[in-house]
Image (cartoon, rainbow, N blue to C red; front, side, top):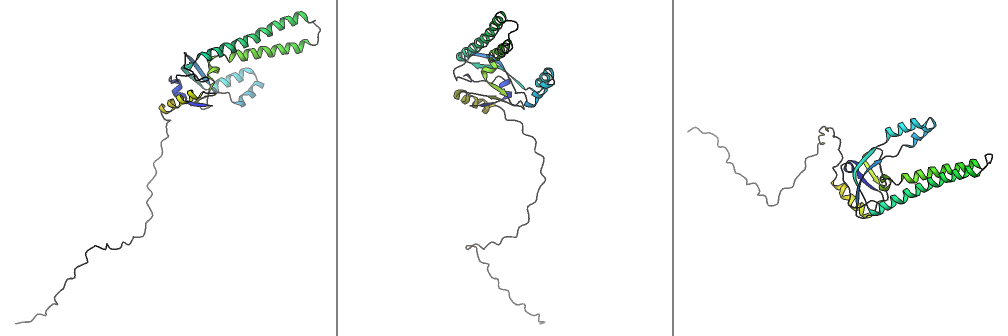
Length: 216
C-alpha cells in the first residue's frame, strides 16, 4: 500500500516507531533524502546532451530531507544483500572482460557482443548497488508540488502510525475568500394568521346618542 505524509512534517523529524517495509520496531534512525521523479519530457534533452538533461532534472527535482527515518534489522540485511549483488555483478563483469581479452583472438567477430554483455553487467551492478542506499530502502518519493511524501510498499503497522502523523500535522493554508456583497431576499407576500381560539373576543361598547342642545 502507498501512504502519504505531509512533507513539512517529514522535514520536521516526524517519524514512526516501526520501519516502512517490515513494520518491525526501528533499531536505527538515519537521515534520508526523498526526491521527486524527473518529468518524462525532460528525457528528450538527452538527445541534445547529458549535461542539459542533468541541469534541467536537478532544477525541477523536489527534495525533502528526513533527519531521522526508522529502519529495522531486516532493512539492514536487505541493504547488505543488495550491495553484495551489485558488487558481485561488477566484479564478474571485470573478470570476464579481462579473461575474454586474453583468450579471444584480436580478429574474433564475437568480441563485440561479448563486450556489450559485460557493459550491461556493469550497468546492472551499479543499478543494484545504488538501491542499497537508505533512500531506496525507505521506498519513498516526493510529489511534483513538493507538499507530499509518498511511501510505497508500506506495512500496515507503519500505515497506522502514519495516520497519527497526518492528524497532528497542521492543515494547509486556505486562501482568503473575497467578501461577498449582501444579497437581499426577494419580497414575500404577507402571511395570514388565523386568530387563536382562546383569544378574548372584543367587548362591544355602547355609545349614547348625542342629545341635541336645548336652550332652557
